[in-house]
Every structure is written in structure tokens, then in C-alpha cells.
Length: 433
Image 1: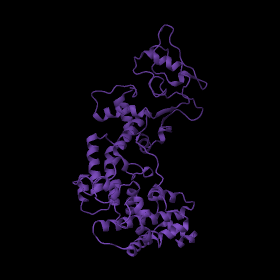
Image 2 (image 1 turned 90 degrees about the horizontal axis):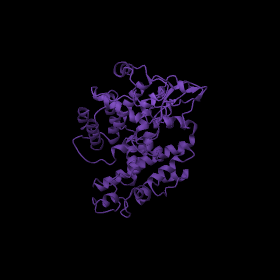
Image 3 (image 1 turned 135 degrees about the vertical axis):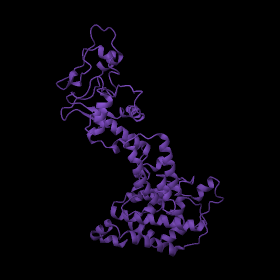
């Protein structure tokens, strides 16, 4: 991975290009090893450090410059991220998937080998972690505490579920070891299944032996529990992960269960859509997260001595002012964008740029909304490009050149889209845009 990152350092890749390489190449390399081994935390930290430097600087030898935390970047696009995977959670999900196959007795080669050679008829839920086993197997057994939070049982006949050694009751095993007193206090053997305490679809719980004066607390709690798992009348006994049969579970389902999720953002459909231009979409993503080097933010941290907008030289430069309120931006876009927004009944008088994008996703006419989202994406990028040219002394494009650049990008994107060519045949009114 280091060799590949160093070879890409001089290619002058865009931010969107670096995201694509991380997602399609580097994560696949890391994912291959994550599917076979539980990598040490130090390895994950070193890889994450390199990817962060490459993403923001294009070179793993440069430090600083990260505008968004890596955990936020690794969120799905619906939650405000870039859709990358947090490989720490992905690695854990892969190992949990292997553990789930061992628990369910899957026919995979690895699960068969573990059950026959490593477990040797031991119960995986209650066995102690051996001191003479490999480091990876110790770590996998340590994940049982995570797995037990999501595993449940679909009980029908109960013949394949162990009464004492499977966590079918409140995610805990009734016996922690073969010599547990709770087994000795009942007349049921160690090999008993749930079928031995079921009759005609009803629970028939055992009673402690009459010779026992003080039953184990766990046994009393189980016998007097009125909230036992339901007994189903169809299908067969199954192990469930988060309510889904284990046979249908993929690593993605497990990863989605254990990761740290966040609420869905409403603007993601206006940023990531079928007509997006990748470079513009990633810029708009930073805009929605308020991570651009706006003068109001730089002034607050003491980096800039002024907050005056570079375009209109009047207002205080914020994201809302720059893209919605700045007189220069509005005048530059008035020939096309503002007329288009007025034609569709879209107001630009919003409190923030994200609210404006959210209004695009609420349009009844989704086809027009998609084209307008493409227009807004191009507008946002070119306004910021003009602002940066003035901020860094690279000259002034001017409104006509700015508008000309927007039109060229839009004309290059729309006709090349299969969606646009298909829809335009049945919707000629879209040509009015």
C-alpha cells in the first residue's frame, strides 16, 4: 500500500480521484487481509494515517490539512460521509461473520475445520479461551461478547438448540460450564435440547430436584420468567443475527450492526445523484459540512485579518452569503440559474446552502429536481473557483467568463447521461431548462 501511495504522489490527482483510488484499490487490499486475519490495532492506525494524508494532501509524507474527521468520512453518503469503510469495524465484522458460521455449523471449509479440530465437541459459548491457541483465535473468541448482543433464536421444535449451552434465553447461557450447579439441580442431562422443555408448542419448564433446598438464583429466575421467547409453528430452528436468519447474513449486515451510525442528512440526494460531476460533488459535500476555508471561519481562528467577501467587497463572507446572498454571485447566475429557479418555483431565500439543497429534494417533479441539482452543483463550484482566484491573486474571471464556464460544464454533462437521453424523449419540456 505504501508503494502504491508513493507512486500516485506525483500524478496531480483531484480529491475525487483520490477518493476513488482509496475506495477501489487500497480498501480492497486491506479488505483481503481483513477477511482472513484480525489485524492489530497498530496496523489499522498506520494505514488510516497514510490514507488520511493521501486523501487531503496527495502525499503520505505531508502532515495536516484534514478538514473532516476520518470517522465521519467513513460514514455512508446518506449519513453525510463519502461512503468509505472504517476498516477497523469491517475487520471486526469479517471475524464476527466467521464466528457466526462456526456457531451455526456452516459447511464452509474454515467452519468445519474449527468445529472438528479446534473445538472438538466443546460448546463455543461457555468455553474458556485457551492459553495455547493462536492470537487470532483468542481474539475471535473474545468477540463472543459482541456477537451475543445481536444473536437470537427462531424456536420451532427446539431439537437443534442446546438447553444449557446456547444463549437462547435473554442472551445468556443457563450454564457457564459442564459442572454448573444449575444442571445438577434439574433432572435433565447435559445434552438436553429445548425440545425437552417444550410440549405441543408450549413451554414445560423443569422443577428443581426435591433434594435441593436452595435452588440457584439463575434457575429460579428462568423457571419463574413469564417472558420466555415465543415458539413458532412454521419453518425450522434458526440462529438469527439482528432478526435476520444467519444463512442470509452477509458481512455488510454485520458491519452495519456494529458501526457507529448517525442520522440521515436530507441534502445527500442533491449532492450524490445520477447527473453529478465527481469533482463538483465532492466540493459541494465539503460545502454542506461547512468545511471550506471561509473567511468567517478563518477570522474566528485568527488565521485571517478580515471577513470581507472577495466577490462583492461588502458582506461578511460565510457559506450562506457567498452562494445565496452575495450580489456578485446572484448577478453572475441571474442569466440562467435564477431564471431557472424562478421557473420551477424554487426560492433562494434560505437560511443556509444545505436548506436550499434540501428544498430541491422535496420537488414533486423529480426529473426537474435532478437537473436543477446538477445546475446548483456547477454553480457552487465555479463561484468558489472565482473566489479562490481573487483570494490568491490569480486574476478575475468576470461574470461572463464565469457563466460561460458553467454552461460548458452543464452542456458536457447532461447529454452524456443515459438518464437524460432517455427522459428527454418523453419529457421535451425539460429542454426549456
